[in-house]
Amino acid sequence: MKTLYFKDLNQYYGKEVTLEGFIDNVRDLQYVQFVVLRDTTGKIQVTIEKNEENQQLNEIVSHLTVESTIKVTGLLQQNEKVKLNQMEVLPSEIVVTSKCLDELPINYKDSASAAIDTRLNYRFLDLRSQKNLLMFKVQTCLVGAMREFVISKGFLEIHTPKLIGVASESGAEVFELKYFDRLAYLAQSPQFYKQMAIASGFDKVFEVAPVFRAENSNSYRHATEFTSFDIEFSYINSFQDVMSFEEDLLIAGITKVKEEYGDEIKEVFGVDVVVPTKPFPRIKLEELYQELEKKFGFSMDPLDVGDMNSESEKLASKYIKEKYGHEFVFITDYSAKKRAFYHMRKDGIPQGYDLIWKGCEITTGAQREHRYELLKEQALEKGLGEDIKFYLEFFKYGCPPHGGFAIGIDRITMLLLETGSIKETMFIFRGPNRLEP
Image 1 (cartoon, rainbow, N blue to C red):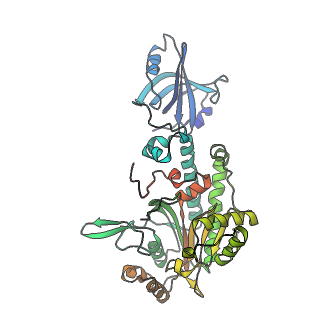
Image 2: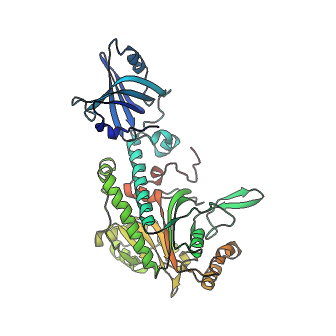
Image 3: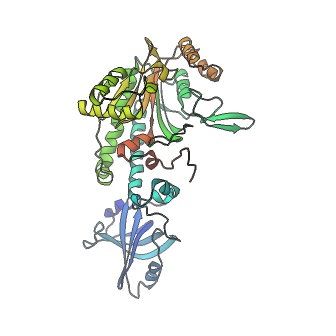
Protein backbone atom coordinates (compact mmCIF):
# COMPACT_ATOMS: atom_id res chain seq x y z
CA MET A 1 0.00 0.00 0.00
CA LYS A 2 1.34 3.41 -0.98
CA THR A 3 1.95 5.36 2.21
CA LEU A 4 4.29 8.19 1.18
CA TYR A 5 2.84 10.94 -1.01
CA PHE A 6 4.99 13.52 -2.78
CA LYS A 7 3.37 16.48 -1.02
CA ASP A 8 4.82 15.22 2.28
CA LEU A 9 8.41 14.65 1.10
CA ASN A 10 9.87 17.75 2.74
CA GLN A 11 9.68 15.83 6.03
CA TYR A 12 12.14 13.18 4.79
CA TYR A 13 15.28 15.04 3.67
CA GLY A 14 18.42 12.95 4.14
CA LYS A 15 16.42 9.74 4.46
CA GLU A 16 15.82 6.77 2.22
CA VAL A 17 12.34 6.83 0.71
CA THR A 18 10.31 4.52 -1.50
CA LEU A 19 8.10 6.27 -4.04
CA GLU A 20 5.61 5.02 -6.60
CA GLY A 21 3.84 6.81 -9.43
CA PHE A 22 3.50 7.53 -13.14
CA ILE A 23 6.41 8.70 -15.26
CA ASP A 24 5.60 12.23 -16.30
CA ASN A 25 8.80 12.86 -18.26
CA VAL A 26 12.17 11.26 -19.06
CA ARG A 27 15.33 13.10 -20.13
CA ASP A 28 18.25 10.89 -21.11
CA LEU A 29 21.30 13.16 -21.52
CA GLN A 30 24.99 12.45 -22.12
CA TYR A 31 26.06 12.31 -18.49
CA VAL A 32 22.86 12.16 -16.50
CA GLN A 33 19.28 10.90 -16.66
CA PHE A 34 16.24 12.64 -15.20
CA VAL A 35 12.88 11.02 -14.50
CA VAL A 36 9.95 13.12 -13.32
CA LEU A 37 7.58 10.99 -11.27
CA ARG A 38 3.95 11.98 -10.64
CA ASP A 39 1.34 10.97 -8.06
CA THR A 40 -2.01 12.51 -7.12
CA THR A 41 -0.33 15.09 -4.88
CA GLY A 42 2.56 16.37 -6.99
CA LYS A 43 5.79 15.59 -8.85
CA ILE A 44 9.36 14.70 -7.89
CA GLN A 45 12.59 14.52 -9.88
CA VAL A 46 14.66 11.35 -9.83
CA THR A 47 18.30 11.96 -10.83
CA ILE A 48 20.61 9.17 -12.04
CA GLU A 49 24.20 9.93 -12.98
CA LYS A 50 25.63 7.87 -15.82
CA ASN A 51 28.53 5.90 -14.36
CA GLU A 52 29.67 2.35 -13.78
CA GLU A 53 28.02 2.15 -10.37
CA ASN A 54 24.63 3.09 -11.83
CA GLN A 55 24.96 0.97 -14.96
CA GLN A 56 21.96 -1.22 -14.16
CA LEU A 57 19.78 1.80 -13.29
CA ASN A 58 20.94 3.60 -16.45
CA GLU A 59 19.88 0.63 -18.53
CA ILE A 60 16.42 0.57 -16.93
CA VAL A 61 15.88 4.31 -17.43
CA SER A 62 17.03 4.19 -21.06
CA HIS A 63 14.03 1.93 -21.82
CA LEU A 64 11.40 3.78 -19.77
CA THR A 65 8.36 5.18 -21.53
CA VAL A 66 6.29 8.14 -20.39
CA GLU A 67 3.11 7.14 -18.47
CA SER A 68 4.60 3.85 -17.34
CA THR A 69 4.60 3.30 -13.58
CA ILE A 70 7.68 2.65 -11.45
CA LYS A 71 8.72 2.10 -7.85
CA VAL A 72 11.83 4.00 -6.79
CA THR A 73 13.87 3.59 -3.62
CA GLY A 74 16.60 6.12 -2.88
CA LEU A 75 17.97 9.06 -0.90
CA LEU A 76 15.88 12.24 -0.80
CA GLN A 77 17.92 15.42 -0.74
CA GLN A 78 17.46 19.14 -1.12
CA ASN A 79 18.97 20.72 -4.23
CA GLU A 80 18.34 24.38 -4.98
CA LYS A 81 19.40 23.85 -8.60
CA VAL A 82 16.40 21.57 -9.19
CA LYS A 83 13.51 23.69 -10.48
CA LEU A 84 10.90 21.15 -9.34
CA ASN A 85 10.45 21.88 -5.61
CA GLN A 86 14.22 22.12 -5.05
CA MET A 87 14.44 18.42 -4.19
CA GLU A 88 15.47 15.18 -5.88
CA VAL A 89 15.77 11.47 -5.24
CA LEU A 90 19.07 9.66 -5.89
CA PRO A 91 17.87 6.09 -6.52
CA SER A 92 19.44 2.84 -5.41
CA GLU A 93 16.66 0.76 -6.99
CA ILE A 94 14.10 1.24 -9.75
CA VAL A 95 11.39 -1.32 -10.44
CA VAL A 96 9.11 -0.99 -13.49
CA THR A 97 5.63 -1.93 -12.24
CA SER A 98 3.84 -1.36 -15.58
CA LYS A 99 4.82 -0.20 -19.02
CA CYS A 100 3.01 2.19 -21.35
CA LEU A 101 3.13 0.23 -24.60
CA ASP A 102 1.86 2.74 -27.15
CA GLU A 103 1.74 6.45 -27.89
CA LEU A 104 -1.23 8.05 -26.09
CA PRO A 105 -4.30 8.57 -28.34
CA ILE A 106 -4.97 11.97 -26.73
CA ASN A 107 -2.84 14.65 -25.11
CA TYR A 108 -4.52 14.75 -21.72
CA LYS A 109 -2.35 17.68 -20.61
CA ASP A 110 -3.99 19.92 -23.21
CA SER A 111 -7.81 19.68 -23.07
CA ALA A 112 -8.08 21.95 -26.12
CA SER A 113 -6.22 19.44 -28.28
CA ALA A 114 -9.27 17.16 -28.61
CA ALA A 115 -13.05 17.59 -28.54
CA ILE A 116 -14.82 16.65 -25.33
CA ASP A 117 -16.46 13.57 -26.86
CA THR A 118 -13.09 12.32 -28.09
CA ARG A 119 -11.65 12.85 -24.63
CA LEU A 120 -14.60 10.98 -23.12
CA ASN A 121 -13.74 7.98 -25.33
CA TYR A 122 -10.43 7.89 -23.48
CA ARG A 123 -11.70 9.13 -20.13
CA PHE A 124 -9.23 6.89 -18.27
CA LEU A 125 -6.44 8.99 -19.81
CA ASP A 126 -8.26 12.32 -19.76
CA LEU A 127 -8.67 12.03 -15.98
CA ARG A 128 -4.89 12.00 -15.52
CA SER A 129 -4.72 15.77 -16.10
CA GLN A 130 -3.98 18.12 -13.23
CA LYS A 131 -7.23 19.96 -13.96
CA ASN A 132 -9.41 16.86 -13.74
CA LEU A 133 -7.59 15.59 -10.68
CA LEU A 134 -8.18 18.92 -8.94
CA MET A 135 -11.83 18.88 -9.99
CA PHE A 136 -12.47 15.59 -8.20
CA LYS A 137 -10.52 16.69 -5.16
CA VAL A 138 -12.80 19.73 -5.02
CA GLN A 139 -15.91 17.61 -5.50
CA THR A 140 -14.78 15.24 -2.74
CA CYS A 141 -14.17 18.20 -0.45
CA LEU A 142 -17.57 19.74 -1.25
CA VAL A 143 -19.55 16.54 -0.71
CA GLY A 144 -17.53 15.69 2.39
CA ALA A 145 -18.19 19.10 3.93
CA MET A 146 -21.92 18.91 3.18
CA ARG A 147 -22.10 15.36 4.54
CA GLU A 148 -20.25 16.44 7.69
CA PHE A 149 -22.63 19.39 8.09
CA VAL A 150 -25.84 17.35 7.89
CA ILE A 151 -24.50 14.64 10.19
CA SER A 152 -23.59 17.35 12.72
CA LYS A 153 -27.26 18.42 12.57
CA GLY A 154 -28.48 14.94 13.48
CA PHE A 155 -29.35 13.60 10.01
CA LEU A 156 -29.39 9.86 9.33
CA GLU A 157 -27.93 8.54 6.09
CA ILE A 158 -30.22 6.20 4.17
CA HIS A 159 -29.77 4.16 0.99
CA THR A 160 -32.94 3.90 -1.03
CA PRO A 161 -33.58 1.32 -3.79
CA LYS A 162 -32.80 2.24 -7.38
CA LEU A 163 -34.82 -0.65 -8.77
CA ILE A 164 -38.50 0.16 -8.26
CA GLY A 165 -41.75 -1.55 -9.17
CA VAL A 166 -43.68 1.53 -10.32
CA ALA A 167 -42.67 4.63 -12.23
CA SER A 168 -41.77 7.20 -9.57
CA GLU A 169 -43.12 10.73 -9.22
CA SER A 170 -44.79 11.77 -12.47
CA GLY A 171 -44.41 8.45 -14.26
CA ALA A 172 -42.49 10.15 -17.08
CA GLU A 173 -38.79 10.13 -17.89
CA VAL A 174 -38.03 6.71 -16.39
CA PHE A 175 -35.98 3.83 -17.78
CA GLU A 176 -37.76 0.49 -18.05
CA LEU A 177 -35.96 -2.79 -17.61
CA LYS A 178 -36.82 -6.46 -17.37
CA TYR A 179 -36.96 -7.69 -13.78
CA PHE A 180 -37.34 -11.46 -13.97
CA ASP A 181 -40.93 -11.92 -15.22
CA ARG A 182 -42.08 -8.30 -14.83
CA LEU A 183 -41.16 -4.72 -15.62
CA ALA A 184 -39.13 -2.58 -13.26
CA TYR A 185 -37.84 0.97 -13.46
CA LEU A 186 -34.71 2.86 -12.50
CA ALA A 187 -35.53 5.44 -9.84
CA GLN A 188 -35.55 9.02 -11.10
CA SER A 189 -35.41 10.26 -7.50
CA PRO A 190 -35.41 8.89 -3.94
CA GLN A 191 -38.30 11.26 -3.16
CA PHE A 192 -40.93 8.69 -2.16
CA TYR A 193 -38.50 6.75 0.01
CA LYS A 194 -37.15 9.87 1.71
CA GLN A 195 -40.72 10.65 2.71
CA MET A 196 -41.26 7.07 3.82
CA ALA A 197 -38.33 7.56 6.20
CA ILE A 198 -40.02 10.69 7.58
CA ALA A 199 -43.28 8.76 8.07
CA SER A 200 -41.21 6.08 9.81
CA GLY A 201 -40.14 8.59 12.44
CA PHE A 202 -36.66 9.31 11.08
CA ASP A 203 -36.74 13.05 11.73
CA LYS A 204 -33.92 13.99 9.34
CA VAL A 205 -32.48 11.95 6.49
CA PHE A 206 -30.05 12.37 3.62
CA GLU A 207 -28.70 10.31 0.75
CA VAL A 208 -25.88 10.73 -1.76
CA ALA A 209 -26.65 8.37 -4.64
CA PRO A 210 -27.29 7.99 -8.37
CA VAL A 211 -30.58 8.90 -9.99
CA PHE A 212 -31.74 8.20 -13.52
CA ARG A 213 -33.64 10.42 -15.96
CA ALA A 214 -34.81 9.21 -19.36
CA GLU A 215 -34.62 12.73 -20.79
CA ASN A 216 -33.55 12.90 -24.42
CA SER A 217 -31.70 16.12 -23.75
CA ASN A 218 -28.24 17.01 -24.99
CA SER A 219 -27.84 20.29 -23.12
CA TYR A 220 -24.75 21.39 -21.21
CA ARG A 221 -26.36 20.56 -17.85
CA HIS A 222 -28.34 17.33 -18.36
CA ALA A 223 -27.33 13.70 -17.98
CA THR A 224 -29.29 10.46 -17.93
CA GLU A 225 -27.50 9.33 -14.76
CA PHE A 226 -26.06 11.65 -12.15
CA THR A 227 -25.35 11.86 -8.43
CA SER A 228 -27.82 13.63 -6.17
CA PHE A 229 -27.40 14.94 -2.61
CA ASP A 230 -30.91 14.54 -1.18
CA ILE A 231 -32.26 16.06 2.02
CA GLU A 232 -35.57 15.59 3.86
CA PHE A 233 -36.42 16.72 7.38
CA SER A 234 -39.39 16.95 9.75
CA TYR A 235 -41.24 19.47 11.90
CA ILE A 236 -40.83 22.49 9.68
CA ASN A 237 -43.10 25.52 9.85
CA SER A 238 -42.90 26.41 6.15
CA PHE A 239 -40.74 26.01 3.09
CA GLN A 240 -38.79 29.02 4.37
CA ASP A 241 -37.18 26.59 6.84
CA VAL A 242 -36.09 24.43 3.92
CA MET A 243 -34.53 27.38 2.11
CA SER A 244 -32.74 28.47 5.28
CA PHE A 245 -31.26 25.01 5.76
CA GLU A 246 -30.07 24.85 2.16
CA GLU A 247 -28.36 28.20 2.59
CA ASP A 248 -26.46 26.86 5.60
CA LEU A 249 -25.56 23.65 3.79
CA LEU A 250 -24.15 25.42 0.73
CA ILE A 251 -22.28 27.96 2.82
CA ALA A 252 -20.65 25.12 4.79
CA GLY A 253 -19.66 23.26 1.60
CA ILE A 254 -18.34 26.25 -0.36
CA THR A 255 -16.48 27.62 2.67
CA LYS A 256 -14.58 24.35 3.02
CA VAL A 257 -13.75 24.28 -0.69
CA LYS A 258 -12.43 27.86 -0.58
CA GLU A 259 -10.29 27.08 2.48
CA GLU A 260 -8.81 23.92 0.99
CA TYR A 261 -8.57 24.70 -2.71
CA GLY A 262 -9.47 28.37 -3.34
CA ASP A 263 -5.99 29.40 -4.52
CA GLU A 264 -5.51 26.29 -6.66
CA ILE A 265 -8.94 26.73 -8.27
CA LYS A 266 -8.03 30.31 -9.13
CA GLU A 267 -4.74 29.18 -10.66
CA VAL A 268 -6.05 26.19 -12.64
CA PHE A 269 -9.63 27.19 -13.50
CA GLY A 270 -9.34 30.98 -13.27
CA VAL A 271 -12.37 31.09 -10.96
CA ASP A 272 -12.75 32.98 -7.70
CA VAL A 273 -14.65 30.87 -5.17
CA VAL A 274 -17.19 33.19 -3.56
CA VAL A 275 -18.72 32.06 -0.28
CA PRO A 276 -22.34 33.28 -0.31
CA THR A 277 -23.83 35.32 2.50
CA LYS A 278 -27.14 34.60 4.16
CA PRO A 279 -29.97 35.24 3.41
CA PHE A 280 -29.93 34.55 -0.32
CA PRO A 281 -32.16 36.92 -2.31
CA ARG A 282 -35.76 35.74 -2.79
CA ILE A 283 -38.22 36.75 -5.49
CA LYS A 284 -41.67 35.58 -6.55
CA LEU A 285 -42.00 34.24 -10.07
CA GLU A 286 -44.51 36.83 -11.30
CA GLU A 287 -42.42 39.67 -9.92
CA LEU A 288 -39.36 38.21 -11.63
CA TYR A 289 -41.18 38.09 -14.96
CA GLN A 290 -41.98 41.78 -14.61
CA GLU A 291 -38.42 42.70 -13.70
CA LEU A 292 -36.93 40.70 -16.58
CA GLU A 293 -39.27 42.35 -19.06
CA LYS A 294 -38.54 45.80 -17.68
CA LYS A 295 -34.77 45.28 -17.45
CA PHE A 296 -34.03 43.10 -20.49
CA GLY A 297 -37.19 43.20 -22.63
CA PHE A 298 -37.65 39.48 -21.98
CA SER A 299 -41.02 37.75 -22.25
CA MET A 300 -41.51 34.15 -21.16
CA ASP A 301 -42.43 31.60 -23.81
CA PRO A 302 -46.18 30.90 -23.38
CA LEU A 303 -45.42 27.19 -22.97
CA ASP A 304 -43.18 27.97 -19.98
CA VAL A 305 -45.40 30.49 -18.20
CA GLY A 306 -45.67 29.49 -14.54
CA ASP A 307 -42.17 28.05 -14.65
CA MET A 308 -38.62 28.97 -15.63
CA ASN A 309 -36.50 28.04 -18.64
CA SER A 310 -32.77 28.24 -19.30
CA GLU A 311 -32.89 31.75 -20.77
CA SER A 312 -34.90 33.19 -17.88
CA GLU A 313 -32.56 31.51 -15.38
CA LYS A 314 -29.55 33.21 -16.94
CA LEU A 315 -31.28 36.60 -16.93
CA ALA A 316 -32.51 36.09 -13.36
CA SER A 317 -28.94 35.58 -12.18
CA LYS A 318 -27.80 38.64 -14.09
CA TYR A 319 -30.58 40.73 -12.57
CA ILE A 320 -29.91 39.52 -9.01
CA LYS A 321 -26.13 39.99 -9.36
CA GLU A 322 -26.64 43.57 -10.51
CA LYS A 323 -29.22 44.39 -7.85
CA TYR A 324 -27.89 42.49 -4.83
CA GLY A 325 -24.33 41.50 -5.74
CA HIS A 326 -25.27 37.89 -4.96
CA GLU A 327 -24.66 34.73 -7.02
CA PHE A 328 -27.71 32.86 -5.69
CA VAL A 329 -31.44 33.54 -5.90
CA PHE A 330 -34.50 31.66 -4.61
CA ILE A 331 -37.53 31.86 -6.91
CA THR A 332 -40.92 31.07 -5.35
CA ASP A 333 -44.64 30.95 -6.19
CA TYR A 334 -44.57 28.67 -9.21
CA SER A 335 -47.71 27.43 -10.93
CA ALA A 336 -49.25 24.30 -9.41
CA LYS A 337 -49.43 22.90 -12.94
CA LYS A 338 -45.64 23.00 -13.15
CA ARG A 339 -44.89 21.49 -9.74
CA ALA A 340 -45.05 17.93 -8.43
CA PHE A 341 -48.28 16.73 -6.81
CA TYR A 342 -46.61 16.22 -3.43
CA HIS A 343 -45.75 19.92 -2.98
CA MET A 344 -47.91 21.50 -0.29
CA ARG A 345 -50.13 24.32 -1.54
CA LYS A 346 -51.40 27.44 0.18
CA ASP A 347 -54.19 29.33 -1.55
CA GLY A 348 -53.39 27.20 -4.60
CA ILE A 349 -49.71 28.21 -4.64
CA PRO A 350 -47.05 25.49 -4.24
CA GLN A 351 -44.99 26.05 -1.11
CA GLY A 352 -41.64 25.56 -2.73
CA TYR A 353 -38.84 27.12 -4.71
CA ASP A 354 -36.09 26.76 -7.26
CA LEU A 355 -32.57 27.84 -6.39
CA ILE A 356 -30.59 29.42 -9.23
CA TRP A 357 -26.81 29.75 -9.17
CA LYS A 358 -24.75 31.37 -11.91
CA GLY A 359 -27.66 31.22 -14.33
CA CYS A 360 -28.61 27.60 -13.74
CA GLU A 361 -31.17 25.85 -11.53
CA ILE A 362 -29.48 23.63 -8.94
CA THR A 363 -32.40 22.76 -6.65
CA THR A 364 -36.14 22.32 -6.52
CA GLY A 365 -37.22 22.28 -2.91
CA ALA A 366 -40.52 22.44 -1.06
CA GLN A 367 -42.63 21.75 1.95
CA ARG A 368 -44.37 18.44 1.22
CA GLU A 369 -48.06 17.76 1.58
CA HIS A 370 -48.22 15.31 4.49
CA ARG A 371 -52.01 15.17 4.96
CA TYR A 372 -53.38 12.04 3.33
CA GLU A 373 -56.65 13.36 1.88
CA LEU A 374 -55.10 16.48 0.36
CA LEU A 375 -52.18 14.50 -1.02
CA LYS A 376 -54.51 11.95 -2.59
CA GLU A 377 -56.58 14.75 -4.13
CA GLN A 378 -53.52 16.42 -5.65
CA ALA A 379 -52.28 13.11 -7.03
CA LEU A 380 -55.61 12.42 -8.73
CA GLU A 381 -55.54 15.92 -10.17
CA LYS A 382 -52.25 14.96 -11.90
CA GLY A 383 -53.75 11.72 -13.17
CA LEU A 384 -51.85 9.53 -10.71
CA GLY A 385 -53.72 6.67 -9.09
CA GLU A 386 -52.75 3.02 -8.70
CA ASP A 387 -49.09 3.67 -9.50
CA ILE A 388 -48.60 5.62 -6.29
CA LYS A 389 -50.97 3.66 -4.06
CA PHE A 390 -47.99 2.31 -2.09
CA TYR A 391 -46.70 5.87 -1.57
CA LEU A 392 -50.01 7.22 -0.30
CA GLU A 393 -50.03 4.46 2.32
CA PHE A 394 -47.12 6.21 4.06
CA PHE A 395 -49.43 9.06 5.09
CA LYS A 396 -52.41 7.11 6.43
CA TYR A 397 -50.92 6.52 9.85
CA GLY A 398 -49.54 9.89 10.86
CA CYS A 399 -46.68 11.83 9.33
CA PRO A 400 -45.07 15.07 10.59
CA PRO A 401 -44.85 18.26 8.52
CA HIS A 402 -41.68 18.03 6.46
CA GLY A 403 -39.79 19.29 3.45
CA GLY A 404 -36.60 18.85 1.52
CA PHE A 405 -34.59 19.30 -1.63
CA ALA A 406 -31.91 17.72 -3.80
CA ILE A 407 -28.69 19.07 -5.28
CA GLY A 408 -27.06 17.53 -8.34
CA ILE A 409 -23.42 17.03 -7.37
CA ASP A 410 -22.14 17.03 -10.95
CA ARG A 411 -24.07 20.17 -11.88
CA ILE A 412 -22.99 22.11 -8.81
CA THR A 413 -19.36 21.14 -9.51
CA MET A 414 -19.78 22.42 -13.07
CA LEU A 415 -21.03 25.77 -11.78
CA LEU A 416 -18.48 26.04 -8.98
CA LEU A 417 -15.55 25.54 -11.38
CA GLU A 418 -17.32 27.08 -14.40
CA THR A 419 -16.33 24.21 -16.71
CA GLY A 420 -19.20 24.96 -19.11
CA SER A 421 -20.44 21.38 -19.41
CA ILE A 422 -21.56 18.62 -17.07
CA LYS A 423 -19.63 16.19 -19.27
CA GLU A 424 -16.44 17.63 -17.80
CA THR A 425 -17.46 17.26 -14.16
CA MET A 426 -18.84 13.72 -14.16
CA PHE A 427 -16.40 10.88 -13.56
CA ILE A 428 -18.02 9.09 -16.50
CA PHE A 429 -20.79 10.88 -18.38
CA ARG A 430 -24.02 9.20 -19.40
CA GLY A 431 -26.28 10.89 -21.94
CA PRO A 432 -28.73 9.90 -24.66
CA ASN A 433 -25.88 9.04 -27.04
CA ARG A 434 -23.27 7.71 -24.64
CA LEU A 435 -23.04 4.38 -22.83
CA GLU A 436 -19.26 3.95 -23.05
CA PRO A 437 -16.70 3.66 -21.63
